[in-house]
Length: 127
Image (cartoon, rainbow, N blue to C red):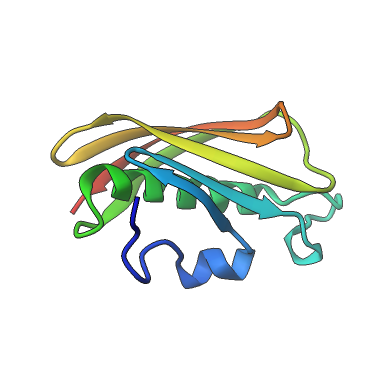
């Protein structure tokens, strides 16, 4: 899928170190490597960084579903943190489950290798 210039990355996701790996209609894969500035006080990947990775991937999945000429915003998002991330890289796979004209429902898995680290579901509004 061709991504219009400037639509794949935001300044915030670039600051975090998010990298777009794959984009298809209704699906986005975004990776994030654990870096020192992303660690929490317990020396693990901060939950806020994981949430931001999820939100970035879900937003890209929405854009790929309804077109990059429209914007989408997060209405709500719920995440379950299942395992801590102490090193390496994680991959977030976001999939649009339902794409209506105005509301999209999206799910995301955060994986490290074959292990599920976090699971999320969100609702987005297409503007």
